[in-house]
Image 1 (tube, rainbow, N blue to C red):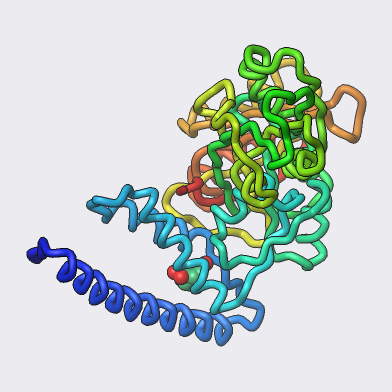
Image 2: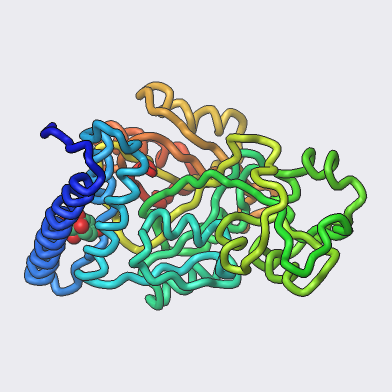
Length: 363
Ligand SMILES: O=C(O)C(=O)C[C@]1(C(=O)O)C=C[C@@H](O)C=C1
């Protein structure tokens, strides 16, 4: 590295020069993205501009190249925003998410697509699916599992009736805060609003700090934050986005019982994503109703040493006491080993649907 001056004025001059260089380089990068868009449109008039596999590769490369002093995740977040702006220049994209505004799902959507994506709040998970199916949004973001509370059944069920596929995943650390408005009397909090999952994730903390407060479940954390604005004796449990959106004060931060509390979200769309080098595949399998069927189904994964990352059971909608399995595993469906496993599983099951292969969440 070149010598860094120690005097404040000189340092600021140096920062100004570096900023001018960064500006020039970002603009040059944006011009490249515009040319990429031109080539994509020449090759295919219905080209898809958002390329999840390429974005994952760019972010992984930046993280591997980074030598500090900024943390690799921090650096990747900066590049996430640069790519988001470049993509918006190529073709702005619309992303439907489980709303209202201020939910963790919106936070996940912005984490994955960056601030330049247009995000559209939907009232329910199946509306997110419908919005993307109808073409009103390019992609959708829905929660699928929480490390404390388990699976989001609505999301799995929606896949059974939909032709949508999975184009990506994003994992968000969930931090809950106890929030009040400027009119709330802190010492008089007798009612707390939140989403049932958030109550469950903060149960122990609430039992020891607010054992007598009434816990009122509402449809979302953002809804809880909104209600608190008008009540002097109420508080809400919600995240940073809702706190900022409704201008609420945090009287207790990170009150979740488990410090590793996180939620995984899926990106849905209608595009098959090529290999990125580190991928996952999600399938749904209907099983024949016979002894040992589940063992038979999983055996090929074991034999080919494919890592299962999740196995979830849901009742099938087509027959009483029939079940379907949602299986996630490491690998891409275009990989010959995975192809062979899927063929074997297909023969052993009543029905198999590949929901998608997609890059393992980078950020
Ligand atoms: O490589 C591409 O296909 C691009 O469009 C460029 C770019 C980027 O900025 O790096 C932008 C959007 C895509 O989602 C992926 C990458």
